[in-house]
Image (cartoon, rainbow over all chains, first blue to last red):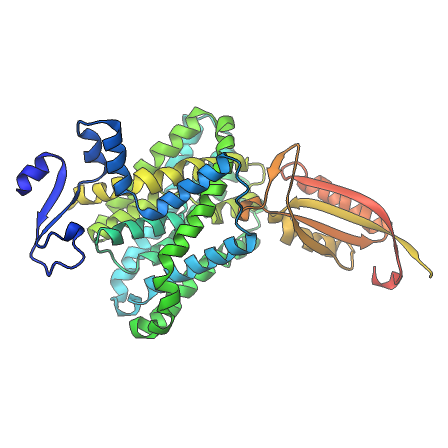
Length: 366
Length: 100
């Protein structure tokens, strides 16, 4: 039976389990679709394909699409600034807390090795991106460096969507993955600034920049959440769990609605950016996902952890990097980096990218 | 009531400049400033403040004409090439001259 299902592109597994939370209430047989890739290969009408694909997507992604639609349709929908701010504070803290609770139990040495590898990846990733933008795209140095910094850095919301995607599929991952999100934020920004300022590094106000990035909202809340989570542990987190853990998915959905509104407003930038940057925004995440997956496997992460690190490498920053690059490299055109990161790479990652990166992780086992 | 004339310098710019501008304004001799979040549109495009990188601020400084001149010249020279910056000056009357 499993073979027959597999032959038709359905991933089927026989499992001895208590049978709770089984798709379709099948008892011992747990069937799920083998992912977006398998779906496209199947013969059948476009409607079937679209239906399959929509089933693979996490519910929160629909909120993003609703936001994009509302923006493009010129709806008057607008989330109040204060709500956007509050939602992002909530998400960052909640992600940090969840990542922290198990952190204290882990052996320090293995986390340190993993962290070192992740930070090194963060420093290096902008370099190939910069080379591609300069060499193939013929971008000016500041623009190439700024875009490279955005792509080397990480998007917290993309990570949150990937984690939600894995949770829904009951794929386990290392609970301390949010630590790597925090670690990946700054290194690529440093590399980007160095690339933009080679020969004139003395002119960079590193002190002000370090303050901007290291004490920026996102790192303070992520690291703060991690530390609080690690300090109080799984039992200590119980009283605040109803707010930070149970409500997480709903808040993520609301935040993605806002992201959709913002991304929809950025689509106009793409016309100015041109086809090269659009291709860059689609291809580079795939290349970086491979790098992330290899690094993850080298430091011994699980399938889920590998998919998440691949997603982090593939994601492009649109909060920390734009602010820092705006101050450090003012001559770079922010419409290019933000347009690519927010209007191309972010939507690509949360819809098609994440299922692909999970496939990649499952294919890459050594 | 006795009034005294001062200059009002208004700079509308990207929120990313807030920290450095506040520093500049103080260094160049102004005694204070007021900042409000704003959104709007101009030749450089629309900035509708929907998220971090899209925020704009308006910084208002009441000071004497010399200081206003210095700050305006500095802002034009330092930031206007690469940042969205609008600025203007106005004559205002104040009641307590020692404040400005």
